[in-house]
Image (cartoon, rainbow, N blue to C red; front, side, top):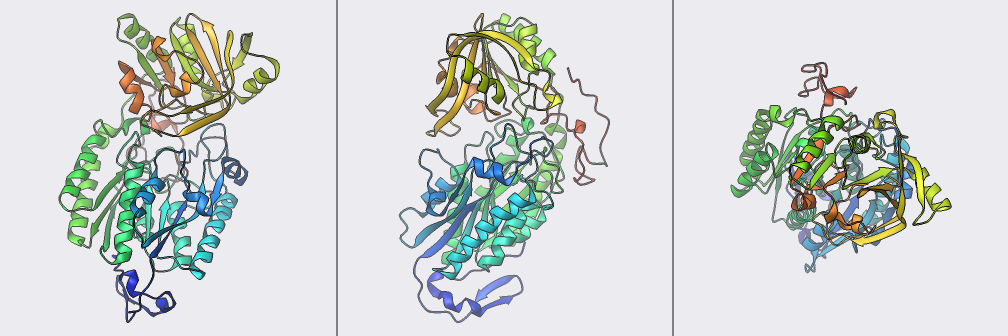
Length: 542
C-alpha cells in the first residue's frame, strides 16, 4: 500500500483543505499555517461474521431488530464489557485536543443462528446512514480521521469485498484524512482493503481477549498520525491458506507460533503486526488468511515483516487442518473418560452454527450418559409453547431442535420437569465480556432426571462462563459433562473448570472438514480446498 504523510492538524485550517497537493504516494499539505482546534475523529461500526451456508438471510429488518445506535449513543459502552470502542475511548481520554464523534454502530442481526448473506438493501441502507452522518460532520465542524470497528468476514450479495467497499464509501465523503480499521481475527481480506485503508489492526487472541487493546492501539496510531507524529506505512500479504475456526486458537500451535512471531516483529520496531487466519464459512473471493503490518514510515521493515509472516503461515498450512470425531464416537470416548475419573469434560459441539443441532444431545441420551448439561438447543416455538401453557414444576414431553435445517439432525423427544422458565439476567464474570450486563427475554431448563439437564434457547447461544447457567439455577460444579456450541471462545473460562476440552465434529454448517462445503467464489489456489488442492471428503458424519 502507498504510504500517506499527514501534516499536524494544528497547521491546517479546514477551509484550506482544497490546497492538498498529491505527489506520488505521499499526501502533502502545502502552505497551511493557520492554527486549528483539537482533532475530531469519527467512529463507526458495521460488523458481521457472515456464514453464507446458513439458511437465514441477514435482511435490513433483522439488522433493525438487532439494534442500530446513532450519534453519541454509538460511543456509549456502559454495561457492555470491553471492546474496540472502549479502547478508542481510552486512547482519547485525558487528551484535550481529541474528540471522538459517534456516527453509527450496529448490533448483530436478530436471527436464530448465524446470519447468511447480507442483502444488498441492508448494506446500502446502513452505509447510506453512515455516509450521510459523516457528511454532516464534514460540512459542519469537520473530521480529521475515521476509526472503523469492522469484523472482516462480512458477506454481502452483489458486493464482493464489503469491508473494502465500506472504507471506499467513507473515503468519498471524508477525503484525504486517515481511515484506520480494527478487525476480528477471523477477517477475510485482500489487497483491496490494503489499498483502501491507511492502517489495519487485527486481534491476536482467540478467544478474543484483546479487542480493547487493539482498539487502543489503532486510536493511538490515529491520534499520532493526525498530529504529524506518525506516518503509517502498511504492507499486505495473502498466504492462500484457509482453515476451520476450531484450529485457530491463539494459545495453541500452530497459531501460537504465528502470534509469537508477530510480537517478535513488534519488539523489533514494527508498530503492529497482524495475521488474521480468516473465516472459512463465508464463500467470498478474499477467503482465507491475511497479513497486515504497520510501521512508522519504515517501508523496508514493513515489507520484511509481512513477507516473513506470509511464509510462516504458508509453512504451517498442514497443521491447520485435521480430522475430529463425530458425535457417536466422541460421546462414547467422553463417557469412557468420565468413568475413568478424567472429568469434568466440556464437549465442544463446534460446528452447529444454527443452534438447533441435536446430534450430541441424542448421543448423550442414547448412550446413557448421566450428570450432564446440554447448554443450548435453539427452539423458539417450543419456548413459546412452554411460556403460554406451562410453569415451573410442570412435567412436559417435547420435541426440541432439528427444525431449521436437515443438517442439524432430527428433533429429539425429551421428558422432564421445568426447573426454569422466563427471562434471565446476569453480569458476566468470565474473561469474555467481563463486566457486561447480559439479559435474555426467554429461556427454559428441563430436568430429565439423573442430573441430566437441557437448556432451551430462542437462538444460537453458548455460555462463555458458568454465569448464564447459574442464572437458571443450575449447579455447574455438579456436572461431569457440559456440552456447548462453541469452538474456542468458551476456552477462556471453561478450560479453568474442565479437565478436558473435547471438540466433536457432527454434521453442521461450520465443519472442521471444509471439503464438504460447496464453495463458488473462492480462489482456485486457496489451500486446501481450492480447485488446485480439493479432494473428495472421507469424513465420518456419524
